[in-house]
Length: 570
Ligand code: C2E
Ligand code: MG
Ligand code: MG
Image (cartoon, rainbow, N blue to C red; front, side):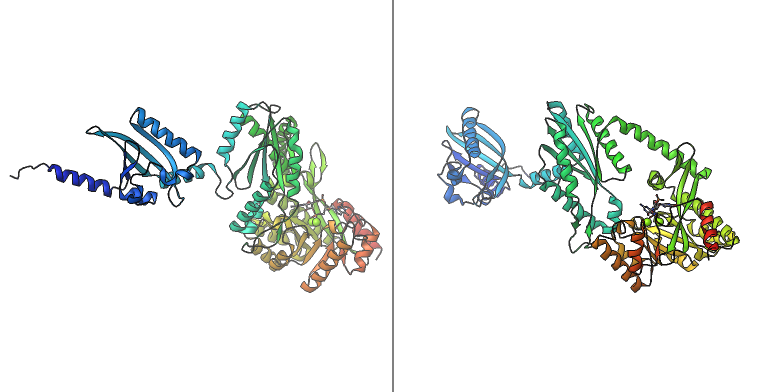
């Protein structure tokens, strides 16, 4: 059996000395006057001075001249604690010889050996742990893309303000209009650049009384203002809207270098007028925002009780629209398209009207957005297409071989039954495919629904003619001409309204006409309201037109009479 031998005293001292020397923590020993007596290797590395330099010098001396007021106070605190209790512990940042700031946890102990006083200091560098903590805190409280405070911070700042404030507190929620479309157009990197650019611009506005500018994620932003009078924020919000009038140009790396116009919708509520609770105020600002969006966006809405009534109204609209699709309340009105030179009707455009049971005949502006929101566009399209096919068949029997254009939202093409439904129409009603034209608006194409290109190609193969509607109003008009197989371009009426006097409009229309010749496409000018406009367009070699000057949208019976009359004057 081996015998147990305690460490000899001299070895023990050596062992402890080695341990102190090699410990990762920095250790130093001071005399009763807080002068360095000994430091270990870790302390030398941490502080940046050799032991030989430190010996005999007082604590803090290495940077004494440069000590900040805060550091001087800490030093005084150490001295007074050691005097009174013989122990000191603290957590603070200190610079080393090279100016690098170290986050330190420090302890000082008073130790008496044979009536001699020593102070032993231990320093642990916790910089990386603190950095990790800060990073976690940043991740939890700030949006990573924009660096703005997130929803959590916004809510806590708002609730603090509601508790403390004697002023009015304004909550503003705002979104970028058609954000999803922009996101699919620009791709993930592009949309991120846009958001960053947007935030930079908002910050540059330096809005007065702004307490917090927060990014809730996606295109969802919020402001928190505190001021004497909530109305003071009105002109600040106007400057936010004006900021969006300048286009955003994304960098070279983005999917598109085009100018992007990014409109916003803004909803506002304020304390104490609208509510005195955080949740109430937020909900009301959100309601106001939602209301702006429903009305087409690009506007500011201050919460009002009338909005609650309107929201209830929109629920009613949805149920009425569902009833309209099943009960066949959508009817086509027909607007003639004519040859500018001769005034001969070349076809009709079918424009939907809703024969509402109590509100009378409604135009698309009152319900077309709700149709899209509630995903009823395929039902609307089918109802219109069947009536149009019947009308074409009826005219055919009367000896009129006409074509009718139907308006479609690109969303309809992705419906699984779309193609089959259209192709069946021709057989069932004995009409040919080229009698049906389909008009797609630029604004609906931007959403790039799956299969749009495939469906348009299939329709084209079937013999259906395709038109790009409202040309010139979208984001990427020219790229659509390249991407999709259109036969017609319909120039939007906004380019025709002042064509007689406005040189820019004239030049744009001329350019579109030249482009169409080069691409072997036909052009139809929309919104011709005067003879003068017709004459200008004719002189520019535009062949076809449509507008109130020639004929407003009319019922099928009136359209038939127009055809009969035209036939009689042949
Ligand atoms: P759009 O396809 O560009 O149709 C032209 C619109 O301009 C029609 O408005 C028409 O009545 C109006 N218009 C025609 N000539 C003139 C003119 O000389 N001056 C003025 N100021 N306006 C003129 P409407 O019928 O209110 O339709 C508005 C839009 O609703 C249409 O614009 C189309 O995008 C959409 N729409 C109409 N019917 C349908 C449909 O069945 N399905 C879908 N998805 N959208 C439809
Ligand atoms: Mg149209
Ligand atoms: Mg149009």
